[in-house]
Amino acid sequence: MYIIKLWYPISRAFCAILFAGTLASCGTSAPRDPHTYYGLLSGEPNYLNYVPYSSAYEAQAISPIYASLFEMDLNDTNRLIPLLATNIITHTDRRSFTVHMRHDAVWEDGVPVTARDLEFTWRMIIDPAGGAQNKISDLGEIESITLLNDFSFTARWKRANVNALLTLAGMTPIPEHIWRGKSMLDPELNRKPVGNGPWRFEAWKTGSQISYVTNARWWGERKPWFHRIVFRIIPEEGSALAALKKGNIDLMDSLRAITWLDFTEANKGERFGALRNISTSYGLIAWQQKNSPFFADARVRRAMTLCLDREAILKSIYRGIGAVQGGPYYRSSWAEDTDLAPLPYDPKQAAQLLDEAGWIPDAKTGTRTKDGKPFRFEILLSQGSENGRATAVILQSELSKLGVDMQIRSLEWSVFNKRLTAREFTAALFGWNNSVDCDVYDLWHSSMQDDGLNHIGYANPELDLLLERARATFDMPERVRIAHRIHRIIHEDQPYTFLIANENLSLYDTRVQGVQTSVRGVYSSWPGLIGWRAAVPD
Image (cartoon, rainbow, N blue to C red; front, side, top):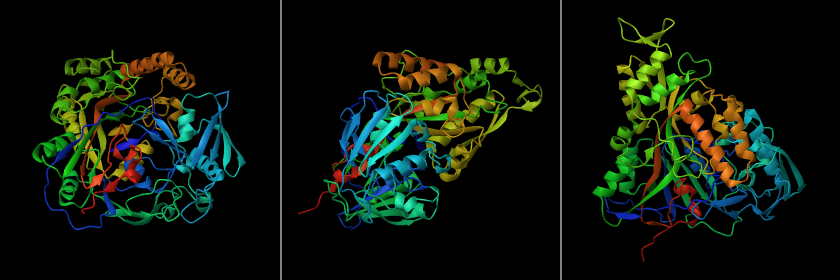
């Protein structure tokens, strides 16, 4: 499962490269209303609220019902398209931005969407009780939001920040009149959201589906063709694939490479379309370093990476689709240091590093021990992560050869996420859907250990300074130099074992027209669902 690292896809110029194909009919489509779209959720969301949401499931589930200040076209050099806002004025100090909003936007209950809603949402995000760990490092940099009138405000950053404009453009309000005085984690309100998007929430059947119908008060110029959206909750990939073949869902996103390749090869014809695109997401193993008897030592973390044959995993589990992830930035980004190769598979060197760190094999049991403590730990992963489990099994075998006992525990997604957020793990296997403008402050800065996304308690004073400089630097060649130094420090420290840089692989029923993908997947490809329609027979 992939977690949305930043609350809005901030990015540099990048154009998607699509692979589009058509595939054969397999099974029979069930009769349906052509104006209903059936999508897939691979897991149950926790919240339908823009403040605490963090997972890819939740990002997809809230997308039909909330509108941001601007949309972004990731396939057109990240062009900003006005939505709630009409324009943003950048002040000469590069710290202040004035936003003017349209006057006709309303919530689905008819109450106007105002600048006060934006200011309220910001306050909820920077409140630690709001649960907005994946947003606080960006929006916490705002010093103040001053309301100029009902539809205009000025946001002032604490300091000049190269990412401020795009962060502000992506701000998405929740309705103050609904949420005032309420907890952002309120279970009842999070299951009956009031939005301002093209569709409104209809129903949530736990373990089954979430549905939406068109919002009669939608104020946008573009009108949705689909009158109803149903996201069916199907965690198991094989079951979801069967539903696609039978016509019970229209699209599958974020497929495993083996599934996507086998399906496209076996089903050549005209009923299904396939999309393939580079992705900002990657898999990783996070090593807990705060008060850890095992992974506070960088030599031990390097050993963990060296004993895992990631090239073999890429070839066998991922069928060669993707690449070994070498560091904190997504593949082919401007920040990636391509001269720095990922650590190789070298179990002999891994054993030497463990010896140097004081973890010595016991003469009788073969288990490595230090100060009388055996090297025995548990790795957590999310249920339904077949690639993750296969990778964990390989790592378990390799570590066993080195005298390290690793046990694997799979948890339901919401439980896994709570353990991760509470820092209650020794090792965890998951993935990040990263910032496309390569701001990795919230993952690695030591200030993010408690309330941000630095779940592993990693701290490096030099890196902290570089991360701060990265946000304050506007000269592009200097930004690249800083990013490359950040990459090299993380490469040396190995706070994560980086796994595979993914590609976005999707399958869809060609009855749905207008589908395209992006570095963030099909639902983040502008104009998204509102631009899709179904082919209706004559």
